[in-house]
Length: 127
Image (tube, rainbow, N blue to C red; front, side):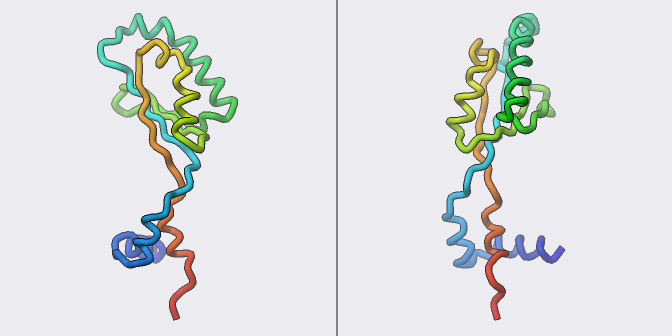
């Protein structure tokens, strides 16, 4: 509980230490990729490419490129947590999938990394 309070305090206090931390660019360790199926695509059209899509996606998982995968709660696509260091790396991998090659879907990408404000908690305590 105390750690949560300290983190919240550090995040919202506006101290010079926090300002210095906020200018640090986080190290990207994962990429979150959100697939959205385009409107107007029929189920019949989708089913033509889905066997290849599933096969290629499973291969990416087995190769360690996809760490986690989920269906979106709105049923409009899927979300992948990618073992990639850049968005460009994730794009290169995912744009080869049949749904994207067939123009059935799009991906949005978000680089992720460690929560850098936690570094404030790692500083020596003031005396």
